[in-house]
Length: 239
Image (cartoon, rainbow, N blue to C red; front, side, top):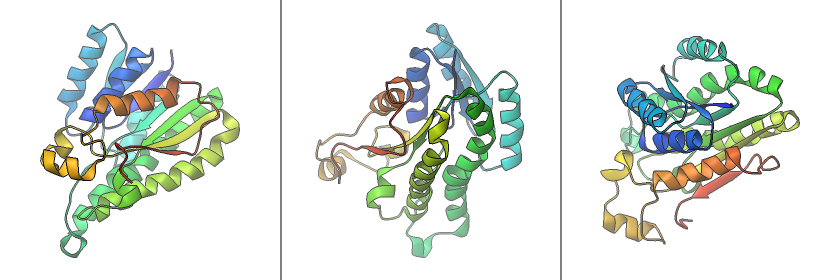
């Protein structure tokens, strides 16, 4: 059974990804940082449904904590599927943005990518098979006022996706990015009312976490061995 690690697995999108990958037959490790109780509840739900799940808790911004936690995970075998989903919003216009707001957002999504991905690569390479999916954002592609920090972090993931895909192309490992638009859930509930969604999204609705999870599952479990280095938007036709 292949093992999958989903960072930020206790959130809306991360949770849907965990459920979908587990239903597809993967052993899922649900990661959390500030909400370990939510990760434990999700893992218990997945196990109740007859699938395999466990949890891990660490701060993706902390390189040492990541290395220690990942060393423990690798003791049970390689992680061959990695979904880099951890991210935070600390929105403000750049003119009024505090340095701590910039650093925390970039450290979580972009530096967190390095801290988690790098120690997993050699064990994954040795298996000659792997799937890495980075969760970016429509903000990385079209920009969004008040989110320069978030756009910078998520744009960085697009660059590392393309470069890492080239590095791993001969090793049986694909690397792709998914860029969601407005997805229903706790992170968007207070930012986008129905009128705003209808104005911004040609399909006139928010996407669902399950729709994002289905796309991630296709990249992981579909016949996608020749699909790598791609940025796939899922945003209701936003341009």
